[in-house]
Length: 332
Image (cartoon, rainbow, N blue to C red; front, side):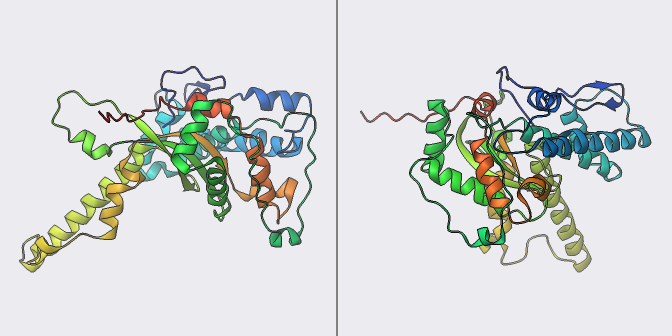
């Protein structure tokens, strides 16, 4: 879940959700509160109407349904939002609680990642159907690059260049059909299973040297404990089904040619992809259609994403990032 890695964030933490007893209230995002009071747009990205619809109306809608389900399911105790998400994940009867809590988490994480374009008001226009045929602009100058040199270099080392990173990030978001979020994450060097299986009594420190881009869909979140739990649970179910089948057939668990089997694609992916790595989310881009329809129209997703890039608050991204591990080589 969301981690600060010992740093003080200049924004309201995702897990710092105000709660009294079993009732949650809508978190405070200072920027959005100021825009609401001043009836102002989020320059360069959203109109004031869209800000109200996305956060103050939809956010409250998620809170209301979450509180109703908490009361119906008689959930007791005092839980931060991330704790509630983890608590409800493995319980099918709490699916609704998990979904609404996750959607609220993602929405807040996204909206805390953006800031208005500096230098006055930036007009937002609805895109026409012809915009779908427009060739993408290629420029060596990338707007709104991170000012922090260490974060910028980490991005370049991970993706090749700022231009390549921007293309990957926005194309990943553009490829989402329906509801989904594109994330920039810091990825641990070693597989989580390898760390758990370490012969050392003391658990080794997790180090992060690589950044990556990934998508989640609907109420999916970046939570390594949930992801690794899903893979582990599926593998156990598969092993149990195979054992039952072999018992019924009177055979052993391993078939005769099993020693020569290279393994399935799924097993290879499970060993190398995100499901077995600790991840820290740094940036969220919500590409759901509700985000751009009001201001940009049905053909405006690309324009929305281009504008969103210009509004990324890199100071927030940098504050969320863990310390980078750099491999040193002794050439002597």
